[in-house]
Image (tube, rainbow, N blue to C red):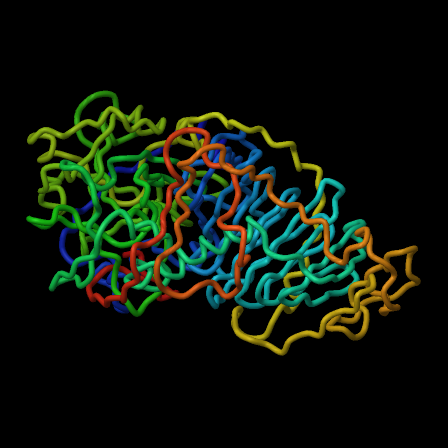
Length: 614
């Protein structure tokens, strides 16, 4: 794989550059700068849209991640997730994954998920065991899909979709709100709000029954509380289209208005703090060097927008111009080399690598994408290095704590504890990097985390999943928009594709004993597998009640609207075990609602897509 090749291969580097400190490389409005989108092979374009990035937004308990064929390691909040990554949870644990502002996945205890596809307009997940809730929070152009060993599930509108794969291999799908289309090789079936589908059997020929959903429980109540945090976020109303993960900003700073940039965010931080210092550089396929922040709010401000410093305020984050969609970036910094010592590439003889946060309107030189990859390797087509005074090149380099550096060895191995500050002479003779960062990743930087997994999940490598054909229609128009409701199926067991009752026609054959095979016409109710009850056996996440006070503070907002489906009306809050050690989960509810602001300014837009990386 690419990450393994990068560890062993040497990098052949070129060292030619003219320094440009004038017009922005990308303009945030539609036009671009003098060195506009056509000038760079690494310009964000349609290729970036095929390499989506998600994040772990909530962790509580034992959460592990496996990147490709690497070992399982401990999860990290705000660490990026890519296609082919796996997420697993231990007993009494839970996690939330954000794919964008509309699509989220909540993962219960003893569950395992693989992200099989993640790109613009498409999310595909494989659930091998455990309970999850896929939440389509807002209308979206993205087509989500959750595949299990029996069926393929595609939400077709805004709603909450609870999915369990039991130890016996059955799939239980409960639609709390919205509507979903379920696919099998035999045909498809619509499931509406208030219904539960139970499917069993082989991937090639499953059978199912639809029954009335059981009442919401503690898991649904927790999901409800997270919905309120997201839907009522004040910060989400103050950022442009495409920027997500901003709900974390609500309780960690304030929004202030500036005449030149409009609404900007001021973090609540200690004196001496500066952006891009608490965290580490990690290597990601396609994106290369990526900043993983240790700040609890450190997703949106490090992958969107720009930072600048103002007297009396300190560091402020500008989220970017409104009116164009914004693309995710691995970081928004300027890289440079400084100091003597052993060089780390042909023509690049510096012993340290430094970086500075880019200010609004400053030149941005992407270091990832097709221009730097060829036949599974890392190439140097657009690497340029030259001597320059960093303070003249970057506005934030003139701020006392605006520049951060590491030795080459520490940078390559994901170590950020031994920060190196350039001297005045080194500032004046640094080697600014335009394009590919000439550093190969050590083994530590190529791992998701430096901490071993506290819980080792059972392997799901041999599990087979049903993947619905991509040509299968799930809905007309945008996801989240209303469409004619499908009729409920009868209380009997049915085959997918049977005529009537909201099913789509498939092949037909004789029913099996008790259950009907998918695709066969309905023949009436044939009895429930649940003794004396028409509700399914839910695989409820194993959350024990807190053993003492001081559990996680999942406090809902005190005002604003509630999610589009109701939580239980009695029984109090969810009963689940809190963290085993000090500290609360990495999110909290907003203190109040607020309106959105509009700001204007410059940045850069991706060629061919109208997306901005500012």
